[in-house]
Length: 265
Ligand SMILES: NC(=O)c1ccc[n+]([C@@H]2O[C@H](COP(=O)([O-])OP(=O)(O)OC[C@H]3O[C@@H](n4cnc5c(N)ncnc54)[C@H](OP(=O)(O)O)[C@@H]3O)[C@@H](O)[C@H]2O)c1
Image (cartoon, rainbow, N blue to C red; front, side):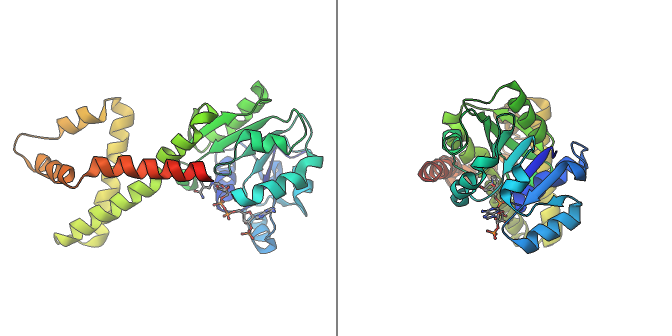
């Protein structure tokens, strides 16, 4: 019996599988994958030594956890296909953006434990933030399975499903905000005469360091900002320019726009 079946073997499935194997949560023999793209399926099976199933129902059949990693628009078809192969003791986890546990439950046998998870892009390097919401029938065993899997990939937070779109706008889309910021800081550094590679290293290290300060000091960001802002100095001059550029307002608008779009999916 497989411990975990991946339905859809794309980028996110690979990120999750890779981490589960790396941290020793699973051995290759514990995992099975399926995908409509045969080339992708074969590549994944040979790269990670896991079993490739001939169909989605074959992969799901008997697996402790069935992880749905297809695009949201493919989810309904996949659930209809899987419905006859899911039994009550299996946990179904969906990472499809914007699809509720209610939507998943409605297409599976009554009583199926369903967990909805929104990981984010740093899952690819084992540094995700994952937000978990539990369906009506997700008991402690299903909850623990989901917590266990996603804590192999980084931080896990549990949230009332009503707030998933809000979290999506912050942490789901969040990596893109930081990538744009990194690019802009590099360009500005290059504009001042820094070598681009060095500028990128300086920016990356600074972002990681600032993130670690936030996490490890436990201090409010305003306090950390005050610590590095001397009277009449360079940092306060930079902050003044950021405020003139409306940086805070741009973030309010960006995150609200992401939330609005998430609600439309
Ligand atoms: N990428 C992220 O950062 C991220 C973050 C959080 C959540 N997610 C969620 O994760 C899910 C997967 O995203 P992804 O980026 O990994 O997508 P992806 O790379 O496109 O992977 C999806 C895979 O599923 C395959 N597939 C399509 N229809 C299928 C079917 N009926 N049965 C089995 N496999 C099928 C696709 O094949 P084809 O390419 O041939 O269609 C593809 O190989 C999405 O629902 C997304 O919302 C992604």
